[in-house]
Every structure is written in C-alpha cells, then in structure tokens.
Image (cartoon, rainbow over all chains, first blue to last red; front, side):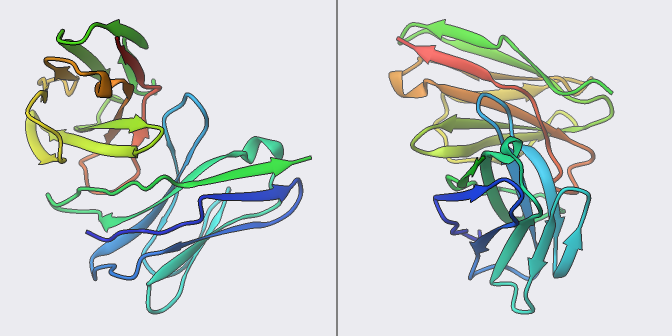
Amino acid sequence: LAKTTQPISMDSYEGQEVNITCSHNNIATNDYITWYQQFPSQGPRFIIQGYKTKVTNEVASLFIPADRKSSTLSLPRVSLSDTAVYYCLVGPNAGNNRKLIWGLGTSLAVNP
Amino acid sequence: KAGVTQTPRYLIKTRGQQVTLSCSPISGHRSVSWYQQTPGQGLQFLFEYFSETQRNKGNFPGRFSGRQFSNSRSEMNVSTLELGDSALYLCASSQQGFNYEQYFGPGTRLTVT
C-alpha cells in the first residue's frame, strides 16, 4: 500500500494559484492518484484522478511526473470557498485490493 | 439523483452499549464503504461492501461489523462501545467499485460517554 506525504497546512490569498504537492515514493504500477476536498462537518468530495502526465477538469489540474513518485494538485484562482482540507490518495482503481490510506490531508486557508 | 444519505446524523451513546448506523447509497451504486474520522487519525477505512459481500476490510477490531442489503443499503454496527469510538462515521458509495470517485454522505457524529 502506497503511503502519501503532503504538507499539513498551506496559506494563500484570493485569486492566487495554489499548488499542493503529494509525495508517494512507493507507488505501484497499477496505482492511480486521486484527490478529495473536505469542508468542515461534510464528507469528502472527489476532485480529480489521474495516472500519468496531466489531467484537467473544470475545478483543478493534476500534474504527475514521469516517475510518478509525486503529484501536484493545482487550484487556479482560489476563492474563500476553497478553504478546506485536501487529501491525496494512491491505490488501484480496480479489483478487490482497494484499501485506501487517507492521511491527515493538507489544510488550505484562503485569505481575503 | 439523490446523494448518499446517512442516519442518524447525531448519536450519543454510553460506553458498553451498541449502535447501528445506516447508509443509503446513490441509486445504481453497488459499492458502499465505511470510514471513521477522528481529529488525530484522520480518515480510516473500515470496510467495503459490494453486492452484499464484504470485499475489503480495514484494521479495526471485530466490534465493528457491517452488512449490505440487496438494495445496496448498508448498515454498520459497533458493539461494546468505547470512549475512543467517538468519531464521525462516513459512508461512501461508488459505481461498480471500479474507480475511486466515491460519493460521501454527510456522516453520523457518534459521541460515546
């Protein structure tokens, strides 16, 4: 099972681009990288998932280098409502071995 | 589509009692997973059910058990409650279980006194 390491907290300001990096040195060949966002008193919400290179959707981009030992979640032009905890997960997305390890995540504070 | 619902939202129990939590997944989702979230440990995986069968299990004692019904609704039971079981219990559902886009419910806040 791949363990992930991310910063405990980050600060930013409205309108800035925020990049949160996750380290996963022992990622396996069939592992995918997934990011979730969680607001207080709510369940996590899926943001984005990728395997290699770059994935972009309407809310974020995910950059994965060739060695896949790390990944970076990029949030463009953050607003106050992006203040939340962001989790990086690594694991296979098929088959029966789907135990995920959720760390403590990165607590992002967006300031006015 | 309606989202994942969990009942009850809040629960207060006494040490030694047992509790049953309920989760209704999104219609069409066959995979239901349960998580425990505490401030110090973060989210920890309890178990996953797929088509009424437990497919994966985390590292929790046997006091934690679950089941899934034919309509994919799931229940989680904790027997002989301990103070350390106080936590937010989250349920998540996904289609087929073949990807990690899980949809989480609002959680059940369990307080053990």
